[in-house]
Amino acid sequence: VGAIDGFNPCAMWTLLFLITLLLGMEDRRRMWILGSAFIITSAFVYFIFMVGWLNLIMFLGVNTWIKIAIGLVALIAGGYSLKEYMTNKKGGCKVEKSEKQKAVFNKLKNVTKKENFWVALFGIILLAFAVNLVELMCSAGFPAMYTQVLALSNLQSWQYYMYIGFYVFFFMLDDMIVFFTSMVALELTGITTKF
Image 1 (cartoon, rainbow, N blue to C red):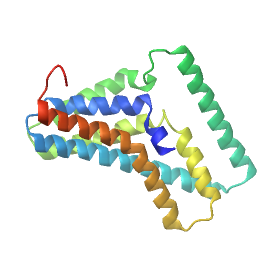
Image 2: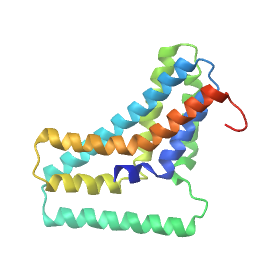
Image 3: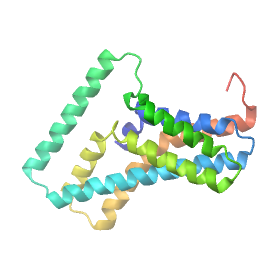
Image 4: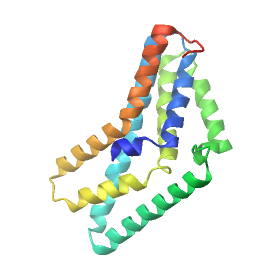
């Protein structure tokens, strides 16, 4: 479920944004550190979000009304996604089209280009937080269903967090593969039209 959740337009757009941010850098070590910081921060934000979902569900209790509400949210989200697939052939993430969001990303892009490494690192971490908060709008259904299933299971506390960690790992796996493949290809070939 985490791997399926990872394949959404907002996640892919975010990753492309990250790669374009890093393309112009000459310092390969800095590129790897900033890119890895982005991915680690993204995973952390998603982990915290899912822990929050789990705690909310467990606080409210696992009763029939909660199950029905989560099921309805999942059905509505699925229906909306199918409608979007049928009517929006170009695909893409509608959240990304916000002019304010683009302005924030442009400012953070300028911060990451700064000579001071620590300012750039802080900027990329802020970017990861901001982007992942926006991205949560694209994929709130899968985490809700997954944490509902976890809440129904009689597990120890550490096991809940372990399963959420597995989910987040598989959620980030496609991002990690694309990022690391892009960075290795960039090191091997440089920026070319083929790349």
